[in-house]
Image (tube, helix red, strand yellow):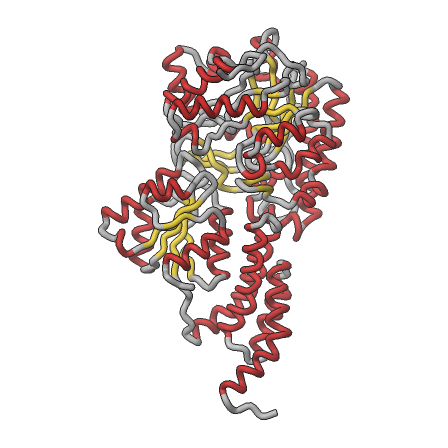
Length: 343
Length: 229
């Protein structure tokens, strides 16, 4: 409802916690995973599938290496896995075997989440690292893939096409399970703007996203399409509107996105927003009072009239003191009721 | 025209520069690697001193790149291509620079701190520094504090530049500063920090000597710390 620009009774919550924070909270509450997130007030759950899913939740001992079905090798590093070797060594995709998106077991976790939560909560499926990030972070390596975009354009396009085929099929299968929101995206922006020229993104990614979203809407015309990038991706927000994206996040407050009220005024009639609260300085280093004020500020900017789901600008990371987690949760519970009142 | 004085030679070089060095800077800006190599060779064949080719050709191009990148008018793929073009030129130039005994502007040890695997920002800082004539010792990613100490002992570079892209790895920048203190070497180095979540305030708090919000600023800051104008 909030995403459809109607004003619900409360601003919905969708706060994510990295594994280590989640474990701490889990010891306190005696439950874990999605149940814990729901218990802490979230109004939806997320299931991640695709290239990003396996590695981002796999906890392996430091220094231990493992290889994914995509042929990417990762190494355990302080609680998370990080890509250390990429399968596309040369700009040639001809010998590469793409994973099969039609394997029924890929839907297993979605089915479980639907059965457990869908009657009361929104279910989002996340396909992110969909295009450029899958190429640069996983399949090819940052420096090489960034230069491929110019030096080996045909190869780069073949990689993006392979990803498009895979994720379109995977997304359609997910949508057929009856989910509410499908999330696509890549980290294509940094602290002060895009990593790649917007023009290049429009040439290489936008048309592929268009065909993907078209297939998603064919599977379910009402599916909510969410786009994610870290950083300041405001340069392509009008393009996302063109593509029929409904919902964007996580709106890290950096670059042009610092002015949250301006973003809401400019695009709030066409897009719903997720995120906005600073996780780089405020959450780890601020006082609980500052966290509380910042929550109010984010709600004041993004929440009026609906079209907003509360989340910090990223996961709550392990450098966030627990008192700030409590401050965050108590403030958001105090001020999320419509009509908004910040007294 | 007979040229016998040194001043005369220089003026001849100036005349030639208006062609080749400008084109060389342009080739770096456009990321045209083969052109950069060819124009470096051409400039040398015109008897331009290697150091002039570096400063007024390759570095001049990278300086423009740095400015455009900083203003969001140039982006990572193109910056990487410029760096590549510069490398092509440097391959020709490097042995000659060594022969002529040209000294680098300064030396910098650079790395992404322990627990952090982000390398692209650091690598852009690397090439901007190199573009400005610094000698850079790039220790890579996930670099433990003691590695910076060892690198300092080996290379005696007076600037240590530390990158951290995660709020959770920023404390490692502090750990490196502490490691230099413990080793009794803090007074011998200037520590420069950067990375997405890093701020001047944080730099002050942990006792770093400098902070740079982007790669082009890192070059300016390194020069400032070494008293180079």
